[in-house]
Length: 232
Image (cartoon, rainbow, N blue to C red; front, side, top):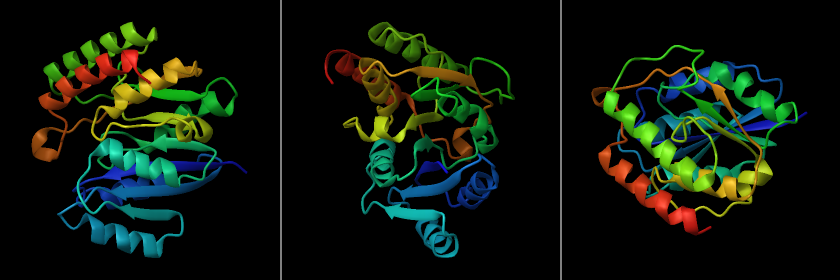
C-alpha cells in the first residue's frame, strides 16, 4: 500500500494545531499516512502540544528547530524526513481543508501528474472574503512567475502543493521563508514535471486571527522570481 507524508510547518499555532491534526487524521485517502510536524521554534506552548501528540499518536512525528528559521526551512526539514510515496504540504492553521486531499491526490494516483497545486481561484469551493490587496498581490506574483516559467498556473502562492517524493527530495531548496513558493515552482518547471491544478476551498484568516504573511514577503517573492528565472 502507498503512503502519504503530510508535512506541516508550525509556528505559534497552539490554538489550532490539535484541530488540524485531528482533521488530517480523519481523512480517508486510501493509504497510510504519516504526519511530519515541524515546529519552527514556537513560543506559545505549541512545542509542548506537539510533544504530547507525538507520544500519543504513532503516525505523528514531531521535529524541532531551535531557532526560528522560516516556513521554507521548516518544509525542508519535513521533506528530508518524509518516507511516503507522495508528499503533501498542509498549513497548521485552518485556512485549508484536509477533506480535499482525495481531489489533490487524484492526478498523481491516476498516473497523470508528478506535482499537483491547489487553486483558490479556479472556483468550486467556499471562499472567505478577505484582503483585496492580498488577492491582487497573489495574482500579480503568479503572473510574473508564469512569465519566467512558461506555466499557466492560477495560484502559485497556494499552500496545497503535492509531489511525488522522489521529485521533492531530488530538488535542492534554499529559501527559508515564503520565497519557497516561487523557488519550488521555478525548479519543477525547469525539470519539466507534469503539473496539474485542482480547485480548492479557502477559509482565510485575518491578522488578528494569526495570519503571518505580509507585504515584506511580497517583495521577497519578487526578488525570488528574478533570481530563479536565471538560476537553479
